[in-house]
Length: 446
Image 1 (cartoon, rainbow, N blue to C red):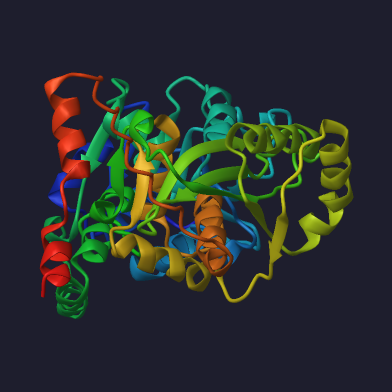
Image 2: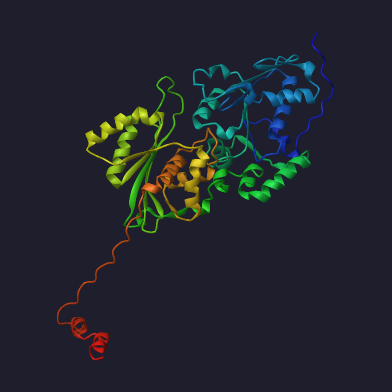
């Protein structure tokens, strides 16, 4: 016999999040740590699942195991609210025994438009850590969840301004969404231990504090790289004399066995050293194409810029494409000295050399679309896996290749045109050249 519902369950919801109970196609909650976003959603979904039969999906971009899902916070609140006799926690699913509601958990990255069709009957989808969900995944998920009255609940800590979820719901202000920014100060149950941690981080690193606790984008605050370090310029006003070098972060291209997957980017960057040792970025290419395409783009960049060397990273990908690159150079009759560099340490340690150069104010980035993207990636970089930071890898290669790079010679001063014959300037110049040197005369008559 199914248990009867308790007459009352005490929920702890910040007042700012009470509109979550009103119907809306998209419900978007964003902000820093301590705002009780996930805790609120877990409690409300559990209560709703006890009122009527619901099919609830809990998703994120990557879910390698259930430990990385929302399952644990739901299990925790089943225990805290004393609801153990109302729910059955299975290996991959949570069921409400009184209504038949179900909670299921999945990662979006490995799904295609066909494999996700089984989700069409979902009533609510909770997208957690939504900042990491790619545009590809959103474009598959949203059209699939089309049951009448269905809702998409979104929780995330903002990461980069150009993330799909931030751009659509925060910057573009989707009219079908209820959007709520909530932070630690909006949570009446914010504990003293967390507040001490918050204050400590604020004293140590205010940029990181703004991201972690105040919900600011990394690309605005900056972590390893600070936005004011990177000098901007108009590409047409680059120095006349630069010793140019290319650095590339190669990718293998799309996976033919999984055409819907999001392939890595190949990045080619060209930068030059001026006579002061400042580094000026002057050309860039990005693409998710196969090696045949990005090798042609690399050769075109060489022809445009005539670099003194091209830096690349040793590893599996280089071994796979090395012969193809050499063959393409011969066929195109386009050559450059290739300099493979060993990959040492993790991403963050490899980027430190370039960070030091940027901190010294010696890095110049053009006011172009790719220049803006480069600055945003640098300021968003934190060294963690799973982020799109291939442009940072190119910068790291350039910094590691500095020992093999030389500064450009200063531009020669412009030559003055000689004066026209028989003009006043011409006679003055003749007199100057023919007049004796006063110091020479003094030495002669000494």
